[in-house]
Image 1 (cartoon, rainbow, N blue to C red):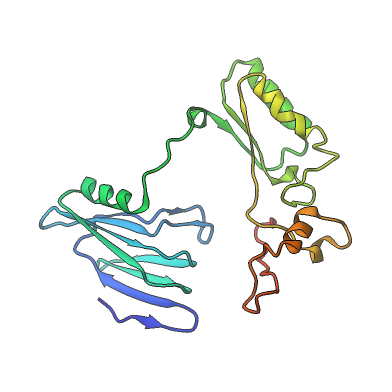
Image 2 (cartoon, rainbow, N blue to C red; image 1 turned 180 degrees about the vertical axis):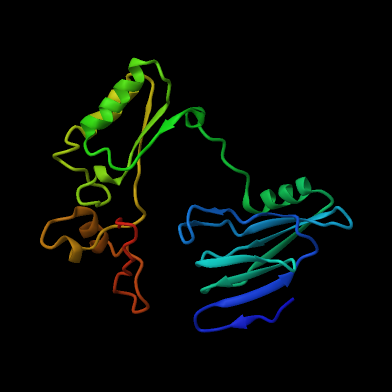
Length: 231
């Protein structure tokens, strides 16, 4: 195991692994988008036994596999809370992991069906045209999405009163044919600085109830970065 690196910017820890048979750690859509799940399973070459490693840390991190083979963890903060799980087979390790974190929830049956989603339909009328085209040729799909372009200025808990004026009734329109509707929602609320003098009830209510994550002073709301044209 390499030395623990403790810097102002990050914590880093590396460890050698017994084989290259490593599974897990998730996937990336692009270099910095989405992320990984901080668990991997290793199947040993010599014994055929398995072990898993889970880092319980919610801070931003990088997990890199080295040719040695080895694994390097680099996280911007938090605690290095590692769980090491052992088993004769990968199945045993997975069972231990599920006992630790809990078993997955059974998804609703309809969520396993065909789903249709895209960015920037432009208006609710275009979404409906898409739905009707699929219905006309008897192409079955269970779920229709709208991305955050349905919002007013990309503000959570709002909708565009011009291009998506009939949005409140759209769910019923889909339910009549046994379909479901899912709204994409960003995990952030726009700030009053960005909105000028326009009222934004979600931000005002959050401020009134002191609901925001704050800077270290305990009062100043923590502002996120604008990425990929979205809040």
